[in-house]
Length: 201
Image: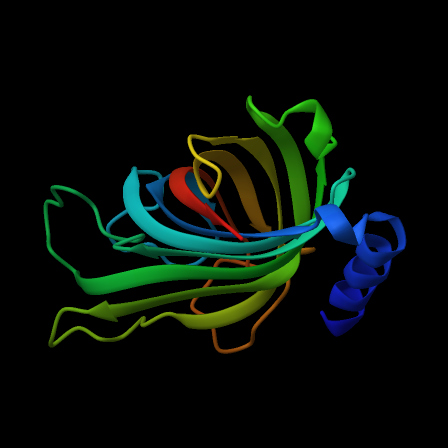
């Protein structure tokens, strides 16, 4: 992970023009959907749509390269909306990723949407708490994962704008964890669609 972030920094500072560099801070909301996992899913809720909260801190140059730290938290990821039997008290997933960003030069899109694609590596966490007195198959796993996605940023004022983002998240190479209640190697994947308010400085 540290090597990836170091490479991002080298690329960014090697190609970006410092005079036009900017920070973008973006709190986001959206939906996590189309989930699929080998982890034991008692209520079969991973394929449902779930609301999420997230955030991004990005550093972009005036050129095409940038870096960002991205995190998305999805409460209730394993919960079914209307389960026949209520087996899960609470559940969640969390991703924390370090990404390389490719975008159009700032001078091309100063007063319009600035499209981008980004991707990178990081941590994927999943956990559940079961309704008592069951508690026989709790999930608490941390695995290496990756994400890839894209979207666009448009500024309404000099300092404030809107970001639209669609992103695919997945575990890397079906990483294993011995204590995880799973059918075969651990895999977890889902799609997120987010919108956020961008604060630029």
